[in-house]
Structure formats: C-alpha cells, structure tokens
Image (cartoon, rainbow, N blue to C red; front, side, top):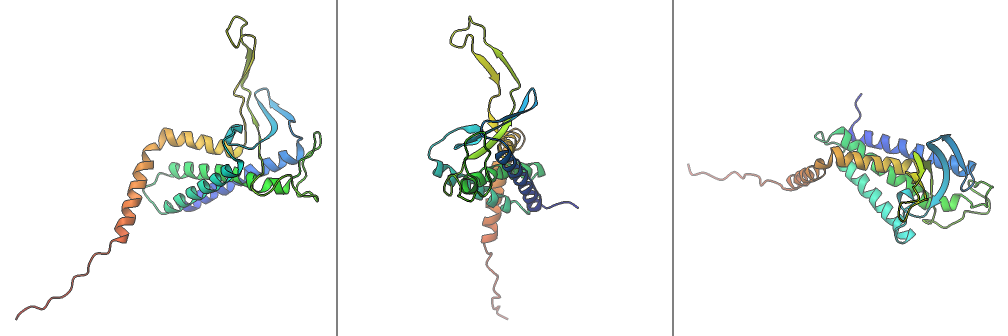
Length: 226
C-alpha cells in the first residue's frame, strides 16, 4: 500500500523525532557533561550542549532563535500540508522537506522543554529526568543536546608552516545530533537534486489556488423573440 504524501511526511517526521529524542534523553541521563565513549577510532559519542544553531553555532538571542525555529517548523508543516495531495511532487522531494521539518522540530523540543525537565548536575554526576527540585532553566531556554562526533582523521601541521605550524588538527570537529544530521543531509540532497522544484511547485500551487478562487459567471437564459 502506497502512502500518500501527507502520511509519508508524517511518518518520517514522527520517526526522526522519536529517534532523536530517545538518543538525547539516553545520553543526557547516562553521560556526564563532556563524557566521551569511543565507538570506533573515527566515531565517538561526546556529550555536549549548546545554546545556538546546528553544530554548536551561536547566533543572536536564545529566545529569538527558539521562536524562529518554532515559526520555521510551522511554515514547513504548512507547506507539507499544501503538498499532501499533489500527484506531481516527487516522493524524494517530500522526504527532504519532511526531514528538514523533523530536524527543526527535534531541536525545538530541546529548547522549549529540556530546561524544565532536566537538572544541571556537576560532573561526574549525570542529569536527572523530572528532578524534584525542578529544571535548570525556564521555558524556551533549554540547551540543545549534541553527541555525534566523527574525528575522521588528525595530524600535526609541519613546523615550517606559517601561523599553524606545529598545531594539532582534527578533520571534521563539529559535534551534532540526529536532528542536525536529518536537517543538514536533506538540505544538501534538496539542493543537489530537487532545487528546480522549489520555484516550480510554488508557482503551480499559487496558480491552483487562484483558479479555485475564481468563480466563472453562470450563463443566464436570455429571452428570445419568437
């Protein structure tokens, strides 16, 4: 049975959010801040938190960033709702938009709720879910949990190199989460394979709405001279 665009998008969003939140809650309640677990030489779990955007970037006010995420998530959900019955929309395009939506929502949950439902213990203690004394922050001021770390390779720069000579370099240092990965990968795929649909589908959608709003005048029977 083939899922409709709407059901496919809803399934993807729900699945990504469940996985993202399950991993975050597990890490938050089993790792102290800064604790690291080596999976392979190039993949580690490293528990950190950030106030900013994906990959730990900072941009402006925390509250404004959270509100922006909420508005953006709502806009993507509305866009998917508009696309739910469109037969001319590629399934891959719907998957990309759904993954972007899920990624945004995953981090929105952290910002809205984590400050209320977790405490902020001193390492090596781990955080407690629903602590009796309350959370570490107010509504909308929670921190985003990151843990996926892929130091693919590292080396020391030669001493003769200006500015960076002798420094230790790690390739791919960002630490991120499932929501970040969902959003980032889907944006790349969208740009590479579906960018042309963005303008085309929006134009078609507007034309469809305009057509539906226009009511053709009904022909009236005019008397004829016999």
